[in-house]
Amino acid sequence: MKYDYVKAILYAYPALGEIGEAVGAAADNKALLSYRDLRSTEKVAGEIVKEICVRRTIEELCSVVEEMLGDCSEEETFLLEYKYFRRKRVLREKFSSFALGCTERNYFRKQNRLFLKAAGYFTRKGWTQEKFLAETDGLFSRVMAALGDGREYALTAQRRRGRPCQSSG
Image (cartoon, rainbow, N blue to C red; front, side):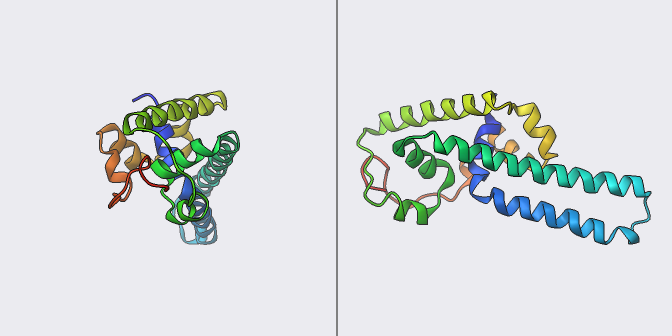
């Protein structure tokens, strides 16, 4: 799909901060241990710079998602939280009294409209699938492969019960 990268970003959003820190720590460790590396200084420095750029990309993605969330209504924020972010604590605390009054069919329509809105937002901000893949340097290749193979269900823990239209969160 043309917008699989948007799904990858949305699914990864809750962990983007941790991912960025891990990539930054890897760059720091590589720099600290570079004296042991037998390759040329130029090659090692190039890898370190690449990891620093990936960390900045992840930080930029995180801020773009946060900007998008700032433009979303409460219902849209709930829908993103419920489908993509799946942070139980946020759903329990922030949306405990929120009720999504709709049929199951309308729920899927709302999710689809919201996804297209998010895809448009990322596109307007200059994020295309090519840019995402190039600037993250393969960091999300397994996520993209799962999405491409139609295994979106493998990216998140399955819910045990309840539907968003019948429960309050």
